[in-house]
Image 1 (tube, rainbow, N blue to C red):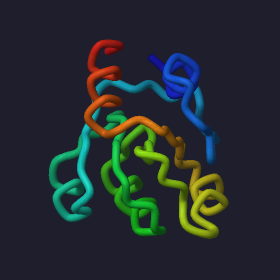
Image 2 (image 1 turned 90 degrees about the vertical axis):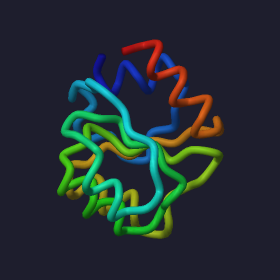
Image 3 (image 1 turned 45 degrees about the vertical axis):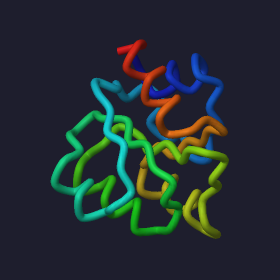
Length: 108
């Protein structure tokens, strides 16, 4: 499934979607950035409540296909623009991390 397909299927908000056709092959949920750097894999959808610019550095290092901010979290000021510049897909959801992870697992 592509990031755009995930967005449409799960009714996610697109804060930045520069690579909507990128494939999602798995998922990872976590908020401790150093842990995510060691555990998330390329092409994962990363679910988090972290919204600061550091998430973009972690996304670049791990090569995740997208970041999904859960539980109604919105990106901090400037983060969405920076995500677009760095070509990182940044989405949002009102759903809990648990509920969204279950939905993504069923789709993949």
